Length: 179
Image (tube, rainbow, N blue to C red):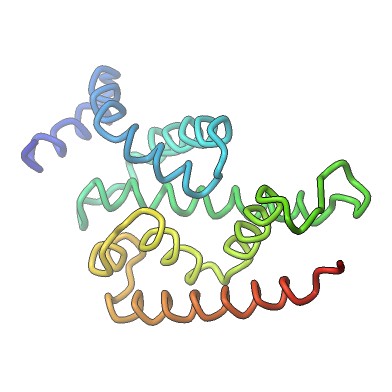
């Protein structure tokens, strides 16, 4: 679709024509669902967050200023929303009592996955965003730069630091596990 057609759709949405929002939804729902799934690691949460994102998009459509592509803008809105979701999720996870029903066997792959996900979620925000966009969703550094409004070199640097932090944290978790 030519960029001018998408801008036309946005103008129509701003004028209250709901059919154009449906077109935008159909164009972006699969891409954004994949993003949600990478952040949440849970199909139900991903679906819920996708709906929340589209509600946020429709509520804030007037803030799209056409300085970047709509694709970049909607991805930025999504990443910001998902970061807030993850912050809430980490706070909930940290409030779980040690003796909760969660199986804490270090040999259990579910717990290992949760440990890795927890460490990804606890990375500094910029590192986490770049790590997920690059490593889990396959964006190039130039695209990440546009989405997060940073330089491609900053994206490369943050990815490198994120990998280093994850290695250090996961090694520490491995050695702290009691037999």
